[in-house]
Image (tube, rainbow, N blue to C red; front, side, top):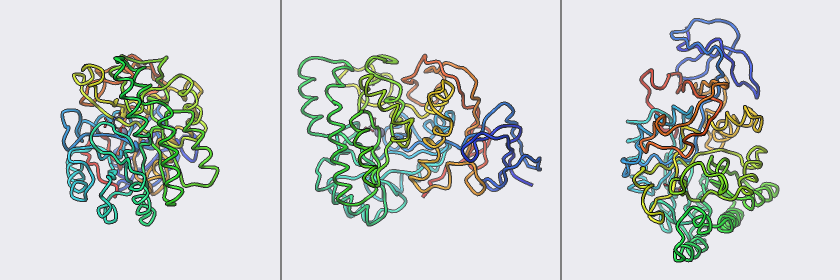
Length: 432
Ligand code: NCD
Ligand code: ZN
């Protein structure tokens, strides 16, 4: 007898959609077959499509320290509602995740409250080499090469290189927010001083050239150290070109982009500029198109969200005081399903970008529907049309950059290691 059966539906198996029932034992996929088997619990998936649970490699769940914006419960509820069953949380919490003690404490907090599995990114500073050499239960390290929300910053190339060498030795992954701090600082001072205060000005304060320079630096340092590098939130055509070149040269480099850079541009804003203020900022339509194309082609490997919630009150502050970042963990899968329905993205590429590739990047036994893998699923209605609305979101911040956007494709259920999130008792676990 199996613990769970997903019956009467279709599933994304071996790169294509097939009719199959999926059976689960002890949290793992135990059998995939057209036959009917006995199970403790059955979920009727008639008319629905079973996908692997999505993995979001870049979220800010804000706990510890900024629980008024989000916490592990609300963040994970939002993730599950959007078909995301595993997240990787960033280190710019309070305290910052730059010591083993802070990392262990965050794991404890998250295991007590999260409804999805998770991993934690460790944070690099200009001085925490000893911590880096010894850190346990993290396999990736975030490098904030430019100032952003919080105080974490590593802007000294020698320090980055020293860390990259340690990561190389330890087989760990460098995860880079690659913008050039000096260029960002200079441009920001100039633009802010000019009295301009809107999203267009912000795009000039953190210009495309700063992202390109940041990526050049990260690539050069990784080439020298020989470590694995992942560049997060690619937002410009220039970065796409650098990425292509680096991959061609055989470097161990991967990258992600987010719904902001796939779907929002200066000539297509989904809501007021204060809300869309983010690092990096939404770019021109030309950059957006280049990023979208590179994503569809797989040059940009992964779609992540950089889910960075801030309250509405914070987003209503005078423009230069508004904190940067937008929420997104709940809407990434529907937005991508919508592109599949439009014919601009294949389902295979979607599954690779939010399931297969992130699982590979972090070495997880997740990310595809195959016997022996964790039984994490997003059960979706590919045809359902709905309108994304602030009030439908589960994130504590209570808004979404995509309020009012109509999409086709909805997440009906999320299942974590064989348990239906929201209907059964579920406890997310640290993946390391
Ligand atoms: C992030 C945040 O709010 O924590 N903000 C953002 O604009 N992306 C920080 C970050 O990832 O840069
Ligand atoms: Zn981020």
